[in-house]
Image (cartoon, rainbow, N blue to C red; front, top):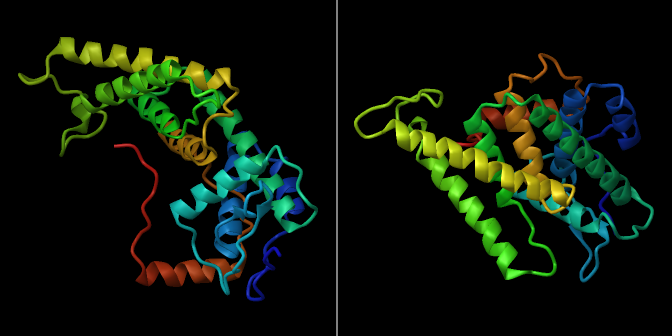
Length: 265
């Protein structure tokens, strides 16, 4: 049976969260739904599916109190939602949560496409974003080895080109491209050309499948990173986080180390 809400925490209803979301701009909606998705995982624990089914479910052992979710918990919860999306789901809280995760996924793709359409995303941020998306790529069911090898080749070439940029040297700012005896202009030109070519080939692959073959967490993490890279983070995003969660997070931050976050080099 699905977990119930811990008595110490009252979350806003998913219907209210979605109602508020559709009054916002695309980026505000993305951040709003992302925040609530984290609240759901932090409240109920890692989502899963019932054994040998694609029926979406909350954690079988509910948490007694809110805990800030780890990246692994978020990624696996979103993977369970993604794998359950096209299956019939019984009525209940888990189905409502799945709808919210789906709405988060849909706005994620809108945000990614909006940012890509601007055409001025700095090349290194573009490259690392595409590489992050490719890390979450799911091979087609046919498992054509030739197609798989071609995709892997472009992914590896993209990573090699990104890793060769001098902005990755320790102690240098990412935006600094210093040409020295060790870094020839020709090598930089080739690396940037490789990033452009391989990045757009991989992007075309994602779009061919309408983004369905990219794991949700990788897409969400990349969208969040690109929002920051473009300076599009709103100064204020409407908050619906319960006061109890604010208090718990504040107490945890005083004693707990920072959680690792998704980031590019």
